[in-house]
Length: 374
Image 1 (cartoon, helix red, strand yellow):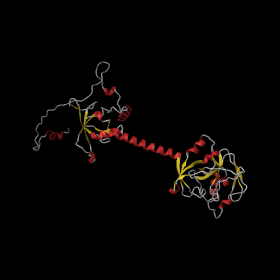
Image 2 (image 1 turned 120 degrees about the vertical axis):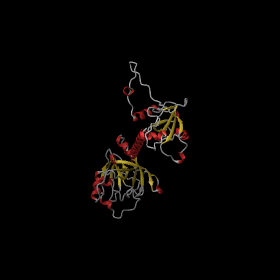
Image 3 (image 1 turned 45 degrees about the horizontal axis):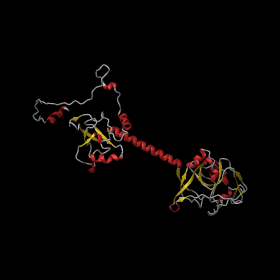
Image 4 (image 1 turned 180 degrees about the vertical axis):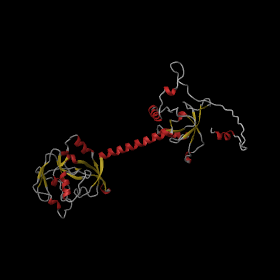
């Protein structure tokens, strides 16, 4: 009690400004805990003999020791009259009961009284089985207001934290959620991604502006595990990083240097061990001496026939052990393996799963069935 407030506290009128003695009769209740007994039978200072526990240590102990959902756990050293506490849920099933009794999770309450329910005696520190009289320290929304304080048994409140512990654990929980969200997003980005078709080289199968959902996991596993299954991918569409020879062609054509994030899309035409040969000036090919049945002339002709300046009739190459040959579905505009040679399988980063845009063409991107004429 501050001295200048004492007169108001006892109802003394000092308006005459004359010093008059005030006589008080006080009844003092001392609340405490028995000191531990040392080896000589005397008491010892528990603060020296017992290790202290920080607020975070108590919170961590709470998390570890309250695994039994039928037992309420409180740190009785922190719960005492006048203390601000925050009720906490262990699971959503406890929420209705806590709302009925007025102990709203996450709301800060002041403990006005701690009462022994058997004797009705007022206590200063908490202990198992006591009743609390609680009142929020700030106004609540109208739907949550009631006649305060509320009286609640200690066992009906799953957990009580101090504001510092509650705010700290909330911050840690938010940080953990954010980190896990970023980690999940990163893992998803390593497995699937979105790709927008930038050119006509795959018309009519894929048109400019089509948006694809791409599987990035299968090519990565195939490369990492050395599965050598690219010979089975003939007829399938793949996305890949540009090779050095393709980079050179782009630069010679007046373009800029491409990054590894800029991908090309073509269809696998031949696997390891096959030989690809250009049979005429238009860019028709034979693979292992046979002409593929699938046609690549469904797209419109390119009027200037620029592709022909890159092609050499009679050129051929053999696909190496970790290589494939790729061709565009639109032969007249596609700069592909006919121009810059085989594609290393390490450059393949994905395969289309679905076309997700435009809505009129949403669905699976069908792969060609490879067939050969004799």
